[in-house]
Length: 354
Image (tube, rainbow, N blue to C red; front, side, top):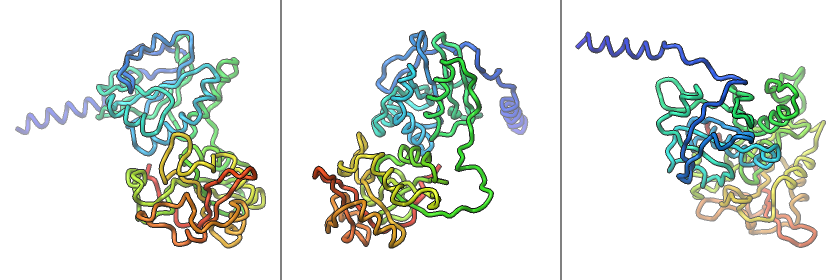
């Protein structure tokens, strides 16, 4: 028995220690493959001859990081297609799992199922010991050669990076390494800071826009405005907790005012749709300003318009309303179109997980 056990341990150790195939790099031919899409149709990479292709590998459908990345590609797909490229996401999930993920987030691009890891292995993207992909992104040229590989992928920034790098590749300019966002650089001295918490649709897409605003020093996403402690993604999107997807924005008030932050907020989403932003539907996608001081409350009320005693975008009574909901304000456009944005007292932002 000990001999058998020792042999098994040795085999596992050898498997882990075995040198991997040479990593694919820019200039290498892209390994050709076929795989089923989320609709069960067959995708053949060879059919992409003459076109730019973005092939991004991700670990598992429905997990927070993979959802963040998929939402970013969904929100940035028009920019990428404007460069003549198409996006394909691939993981070791089944066709059914990809279909559910695709439908839940209304993704406007194709997902590919690789449950046996054939494609993942061909691209060297397999996680050791388990059939799961690493988070790697390949840009493949019209001649089906690999033009760029990113192995240090930021899920929220990958779509923006891809669009920029394809444009540079097409122009013949060198593609630099991904830069660290300015907001992540250590400051020489602590600047003044103020916090705004805003809800207006998918928080990954909102965060990507908000973090680019001059004067914003950091952002993070989470759930707030509900009654359940430490809610999970399924809890929130079941519509029973009263939470909204929100972004916490830390900004320097000496560079940008709270009122100006709200100005960006109203321009980046549609405040006239009740509990909805595009294809994202539910109370978790409602439009809300969560204020953190009396000064913010006054500014939010000015921005939101006339006071209403029963705001349309408040969570349903069964899920528990914020205690200030009777004092929430909602906004109307000059043309009279009702705006559902409400202002209510802010609470702690719950984490989404990684």
